[in-house]
Every structure is written in C-alpha cells, then in structure tokens.
Image 1 (tube, one colour):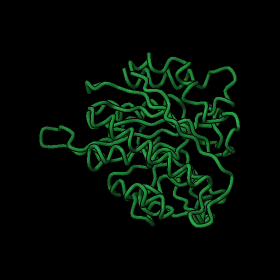
Image 2 (tube, rainbow, N blue to C red):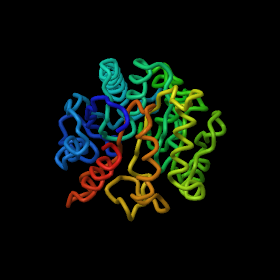
Image 3 (tube, rainbow, N blue to C red):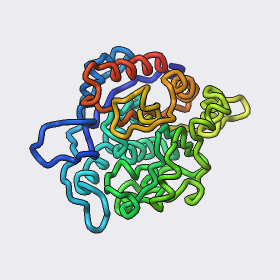
Image 4 (cartoon, one colour):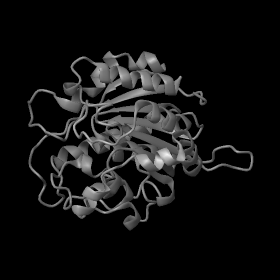
Length: 307
C-alpha cells in the first residue's frame, strides 16, 4: 500500500437475509469473518486481527414504525461498530471491516466520519440499496444502507448516525444493475436524492475499469495543486457486484456483473490512493461456498490489492 498505516481486521458477524431468533446457530454471512480468517486474510494483507464484535441481528418481526427487521439489534450493532471504527481510526490505523452484510455500512462510515470529518464513499454493489422501511418488500436492513447514510432511509436509523454521512458529490455507486427492479418497487433512485447516476457494469466497461477507478478516486479525494489527495474516502465491496457465475457464494445472485479481473482493475486505483480511509467487505456467504474457493478468491483479490 502507498500509505504506511497499520491495517486491522474488524469482524461483524451479522446476517439479515434469514434473520435468526436468539439462540439459533450461526449461519450464512454471519460465518464470513471466520471463513475469511481461516482462508488466511490477515496474513495475506499483513493485518492485525481485532476479532469479531459482539453483535448479531436477531428477530424476525418487522418494526411497525421503522419498517426494519430486527430493528433493536440493527440499532445496537450500528452504535457498537461506529464506536469501534472511530477508535481504530483515532489511533491512526486503517480498518478492514469483514461482514456480514451491508447493514454494517452506516455504522462503519459514521465511525470514520467521527474520526476524520467529511469522508467520501465508493460503493461497489450489484444493488442501489436506496430502499426504506416502506419500499423494501422484506424489511431487510441490507436493502437500505445507501438510503440511510444519505439521510433518506428510515428516519430513526438515519438519525442514529446523524445522516447525511456523505455529500452527494462524494458518493460513487459502482456496478449496480437493479435499476428497473428498484424503480418498479418505488425505491428512490440516485438522481431523485441528489446523487449522480450509478455506473452500471456496461458503463464501467465503456470507460475502462482502471480509468473508472481513477476518475472515482479523483472525485472522492480531490487534489491540491501538487496532485496530493485532500479528502479521505471509504471503499465498500458487496460481492454481488460480481457476476453470479463468477462468484455464486452470495445470497442475491444476479447476471451481468463483473469478473474478478474487472473488479481488481476497478478497485486498484481506489485502494492505492493515499486518501483511502478504510475498507469493508460484505455479503459473502460461506454456506454457499462448500469448497472454500470463494473465500480463497477474495483473499487473493485483497492480497493483490493491498500489498
């Protein structure tokens, strides 16, 4: 990496797709932090492992007011993660947050904002994630992180993190391919909430992956007259930005996504810039990866990107 900061792993073992009840055994994306450790992620990127936070999303009831499944535990996890990330960054270390699912992002980004002030966000995901407690058909909180951090999600959750967490000109949506579905379900669309329109996989290919990554880094970080980054930004990777045939170990399989090579070329400029504040990885499901090949692919990707 171009920045000499200690890298630390923080695990967030949560799963909101089949949100469990108290006492149920761990499953799905809850298992992801341990599986990625087992595949050698810490050694691959030279990170110090801080272990998992004591968090879990539980409760199959959809909160009548907020519209979110397991809302009390979502709120608790958000606060705990926010505190941990703020403390890590106050110490001058760079967090790599291992989910779990994308429900973790508002808490992680709030912690980064607490420590650094304004931050940007590169959001690499197969979905726009701009649903709220009414437009989400399931109430799963992982439908909502972009809405929450921009301040248009469930008000109670947005208030919990003092949203907006990121300004419209410093948020890049890279790789979504669910616009038609989102529009059909009355989700907010990026341009309706003041964001730039997303760059779909065809858009990224038209620009060239590396060029798109470099343009995004320049927009999120900015630069002074000497070309030095002035702003800091976070990079979030949901593995469903990858094509379903490339990476089937996730819960929402979608065609038309990126290849691993394309993802590497897109991310490389983002993670080698000195403006990088932190990284998060979500929605890898070890239950759908019986031979561990998905975990090994992710470890290999992060090794190439961060060393």
